[in-house]
Image: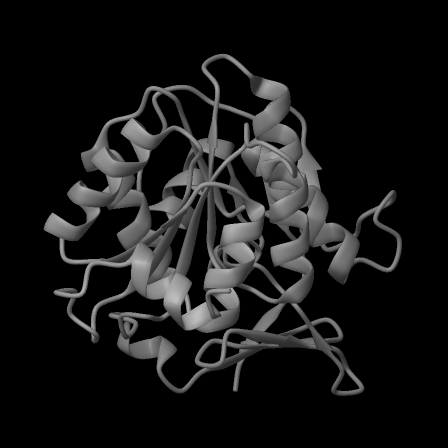
Length: 255
């Protein structure tokens, strides 16, 4: 029987730079798996591939992974279930791959905790751009903004540590945030008491303006409300502006 290290070695390219970001790509189609993995390696990433959830688990047990690219349609355990498990275990950045036109998959994927998604067929250059953006947000690459290096933002009964990327309640309890939730909360704090459209929020959190507006912002806002609002059904901190977007109402202080 092969050990986890043997399995990992068989899935990896031995020439990979050990200091590069490690991307785990879970895809059951062997042609897509090979094509995307080769392109990601050419783009400077360490890449490990897996064809299903069982292989994904073996890889993650044997090595540290910096980002997960996860197809929804997988044999045995599907990508949505895998995403839910990964998110319950920590804040590993996750990009989901969905079928063309399958909005319900995208919505459920974001609800399960995915940070971003791409619709098949997708461009490899766009995938690389999304991976790099997520890694920057996860601080694999040091933050560029100098005012975030030693900053804590406080609002209402909350404290947001921009260096550690952690949210704390008034009694010091840490509330886990996904990468997308953290960036959304930072965007709200940095633009408090201003109406932000969905387009602006997508631009702030993903570093790009969308070609079409989707429901991803609304889903992220809903998830964030469940974590910071006393009553998510009657939100006071993140309020909806009809035909406008959202406004973050509390005063924000820099500590």
